[in-house]
Amino acid sequence: MTDPHSALRYALNQPPVVGEVIDGEVMVINLDTGVYYSVTGAGAAVWPMLVGGATRREISDQVARHYGADAASVERDVDTFITQLADEAILRPLHDGAAAGSVDTADEWPAVTYPGFGFERYDDMQALLLIDPVHEVGDFGWPSRSADDSGNA
Amino acid sequence: MSGGAGGVSELALLAATLDGAIARLPAAPRIYRVAGGLVAIRAGDRAAAVLEALTPMRASEDGGAVALEVFIFDGATDKVTLPDTAITHRRIAQAGGLGAVSASGAQAFFQPDAGVLSLFDASRRRAYCWLRDSSALPYYEFAAPLRHLLQWWMLSRGGALLHSAAVGTPGGGLLIAGPSGSGKSTTALACQEFGLGFTSDDYVLVSAGAPPTVHMAYSTAKVVRESLGAHSRYRRHFRNLERGDEKPMMFMHEVAPQRVLPSFPLRAIVLPVITQRSSTRIVAASAAEILRAVAPSSILLFPLAGATAFQRIAALCRAVPCLRAELSGDPHDVAGAFVRLLRDGTIVGVAAAA
Image 1 (cartoon, chains in turn blue, orange):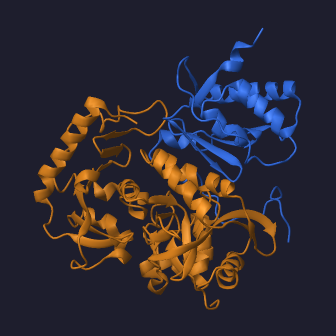
Image 2 (cartoon, one colour):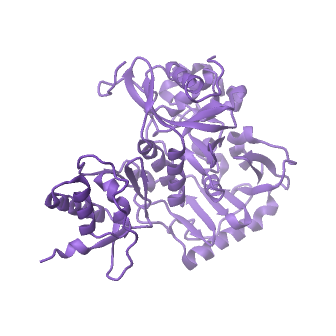
Image 3 (cartoon, one colour):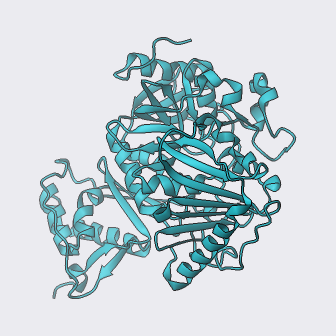
């Protein structure tokens, strides 16, 4: 029996969410909450498909085919990835009958081994939205040498 | 953000109130050239104190057509009281984001703590700034006055206001991106000591083009109070030393007027990163890394800038080289690296280090 979730389609939850694909990465910002996100790896590659209305199944198939990866594990990764995006209200489901957008081919994807789906969440700006827009979050001063800092001459 | 019938009527009521009070302002405007456009600002002497940071942009009145009229009211001395609206009570707010209203091409935002209302009407090319009491404003309103109006105005003209420092020469310069505390201000200050022009230590205006052009928004330079000892040469220029909870602030047109650089073509965006290196190294960075450093604070602290500002900043990151500066602990070493980057790299415009 076919998994009913595999036919689900999504769109970017816009507004308040905005996203830009840049340099093999997607930066997403929720303008209401101030939380922003970084999507990398296969997630960035499938982003145009995903927000263009491709189904989970179409995305999984494309990723598995392009990277020559195991279909079942890719499917699990896609499900996890989309669930994260939906839980963060980055995506909203398209209802039955809603027109799907264009579905990208994989022509411009990087030809590398399957990188998995990278997803990072940043909430360091969130508290500032609750106050007057004073951007100064602290007086850290001129960069001071710290044992935790990396890099050497 | 909010709109709808309530937003329209409240915005119209506020605009009408402030329009009705314009006659209380001096008739002669102060003229500024901001990001290439003429801006005529009418304000009484008390409210006009907030304009000090715009001094290098003062222009003559015969420079051409005015692109924006700005009216600044001091609620106390100009005797302008705002009507009781949901905007000024900040009831119109998202669950999270800053409360602001956009309707019928106009935008408004109220800062309850500072007591500042910003209202921009793009169709009439008019902007209003109401100050509850200009003598009681926090220092950041003097450091970066009218910033919400300037952001909305720049967005309406194809540009944007960015949270970034900027240094360079008339031939080309750099945006220094990064969060507060990453060394933007100190780097910009050190660069001007090293012979580069100073365009910003915090906010800049950027207009589209090939290459994009960076414009001064404010002449303000700030240091952290803990580093006052290292900046003792500027001591007489600081305006707010007596206010112990504020960052000491000065104006570059007073400190080193010869270093004021009103605009430059953008050559690269640099992200400073604190390291333990003994000398600063500048390496390539991904555009995504730079976008992550610039976009959140440029967008999230500016209500209604939103999607348009994000697209503009992303386009900027795609348009020029993105670099990461791995900083040493010596500001002058950092400045030297930036001078060499402009002078010796594919980036030109600097003759020699001072």
